[in-house]
Length: 216
Image (cartoon, rainbow, N blue to C red; front, side, top):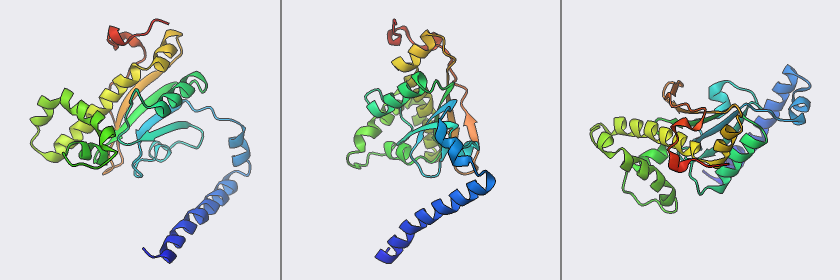
């Protein structure tokens, strides 16, 4: 891509913004005035950074309805201060009612973790996914089809991240003071647009192992 093409691509983003603004104002002249007043999203979305999985678009929700955090392979890592800050703000200030961990099939992070290739700095992040593989190695090794193994690891990874989410102090504190908060695990299929509910929802710490429970 030459410099003219790069400039055209960049300018296209700004032009696209103006077209979007014009369309929104045509629908509702007060759209941005109303949006600027506050945000009151009922949902926190922890998703993958993959450009094909935009939270609002695939759930048909509007700006202001979903608070979003995204990272490689939708991980809940307890040393990630960025993620922990998002969860704390979402639960204590925005008082979201649902937290959704959403992975997706054909995830580059999952596929990278399934290999032994050295990628660089990201290897340290992918190691968290390899830990999920280790926990479920017998099941995954029994799947001979590479695509099938990848799809199953996507699901198992989401389930594990939901459990990781339940171990955070922010989530447990919400449950301790009886805030209505549920956490869920979903997988989005890029190939057909359908979201699969993995049925791993939690609304209290009943299923959290005792060693992870906090006394507030």
